[in-house]
Image 1 (cartoon, helix red, strand yellow):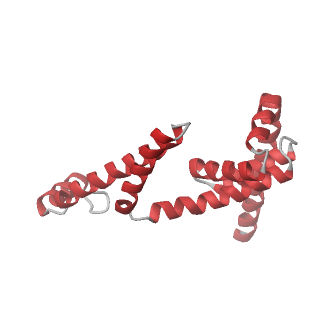
Image 2 (cartoon, rainbow, N blue to C red; image 1 turned 180 degrees about the horizontal axis):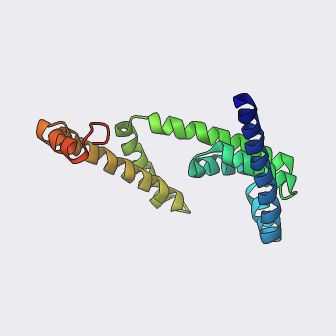
Amino acid sequence: MRIFLFAASCVLNISIFFLGLKLLGKTLTSILGFRLRALLTRFTSTKSTSLISGILSAVFVQSSSAVNSTMVVLVDSGVLSLRQALGVMLGANIGTTLTVQIVTLPVEKTVAPLLLGGLLLMYLAKRPNLGTAIFSLGAVFFGLTFTTGVLTPVLSTARVQQVLLELTGTPLRA
């Protein structure tokens, strides 16, 4: 009986997933229609823009599966061609990989290049927005590194650990 319930639950969940994808595609097509098609066509007009769109989508959404599922819906509803969607899907998988690689980089070694590169792009490029974004990312990493560096000695003292333990009751929650 347990196996039947497990199998039925799996089939039901997968069916709901695909139904949701189908419904999402039809809804997006009816609501946005021409505007969505024009926007997506612009960002997927070439292989390189499709790839870059996929990378950025995965970085912002933090899920290549969500991006890929959305691409399936958009192809099914006729908003995108398979060629356009494949570039985005490949880019989404690359974006997920890049996100993991960026997170594992030692932050101390990436702060200076980000800040310097961002400043150079801000003042030397025709469109300084990319430089501003890169500089901002460097500033965020710098702030995190600085905060961590300052708080580590304080948090490792016995008195602070005792206070945190008393406030929460368990070491894991502290």
